[in-house]
Length: 107
Image (tube, rainbow, N blue to C red; front, side, top):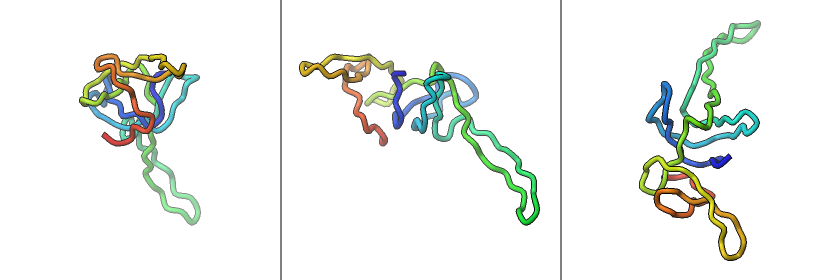
């Protein structure tokens, strides 16, 4: 999976199209990701003895095909790989050929 936890992504299709968020969790076996503030649902919890009822918000996973990583210019981009001279493999943006910083939490 080319998208990593903490990457800033944009949703490319669906009800949340155009929204941006940070990847919270990866589900590689299902090819899905959890994105902050995207694909949220409300579950109603019934009152039980000694506890009031409530409404809880949950994040639902979204398929990785519906998200695109945001590059340095705040545009959707694709992820590629480059082998450095020391033999390490790094992620790069396809459009700008810039390195993707590993702790890309702010934008």
